[in-house]
Image (cartoon, rainbow, N blue to C red; front, side, top):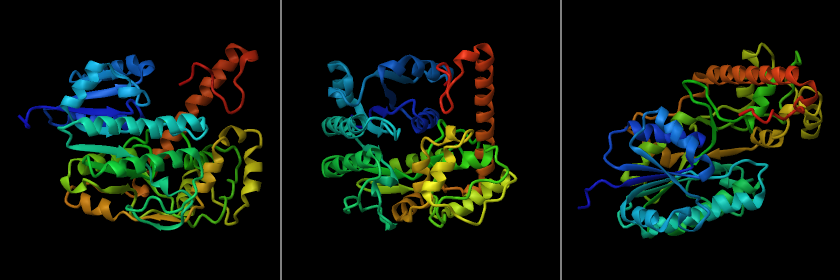
Length: 380
């Protein structure tokens, strides 16, 4: 009876990581049914995407993690309680400019709702909860995977909400088999360079690659801090390998690059590929923000504060659990040197498409040209 097929539930589809996780789950040999919890406004698009993949074995259930019983009908929720064997909880609100109350509702109360299901599910083998390495907030130095509430201050509502959600998961670990994943900065696919949005360190990289200035901006601060980035395909591969490992029950895992380059070294490599040289001098933060407000550069400056913090934050994420649990799996984090060119090529092509789109929109209606820093309403 215990060996009968069950249900794998995924929240956060069709988000960037969730989309790739589902693609991997669909190609894996399995007997369990795959159910994707999708918000109603995105359900039809999710069904079309699955149909394009030929994913007849996946089902889209309309719901919302912040609502009672995940926004499902009583029949659907009872079916999950009866059959769910594995939960991948990726649903989160991560946009730094989102309203703090909305961030808390999705990230904290949404996790509380998923835990309600997990506690009631008698066949549950694993709850895989996606957090972030940045629950460490403003802490510096070596950050251990077991550490969470260490008196840190948070730099934004997202970091704080994910830390609060982790507290809830940890409290439930005595009742349910759970694993917490803490990715660092997730960048594009190491094979294609594809990324769904440009934020954080991508903004500074975009300035280096696309800036009309012949000489690039000096890096804010000294850039000696490690810039810990991980490609999305590695994050998914590592999570899948660890999420099925019985030794990972009760563990928190830093899904990070064990040997990151310094921020200055990364941006020197980006500048070199843009045929520019990163100036040896550094600029105070206020001066950088003023320069980013100049015409032609202002469009890239909305999230520059988060990017500047990233390249100057001396935090070292110890990956002891990661390395132990990945041993023998063949899954390893590629060095950024192995895929940086693909990231840059994708950025260049994407921004060329956006410039062309804005140019065409301006020709069609000169009085309705988009404001710098915005996109036409029909743009993705």
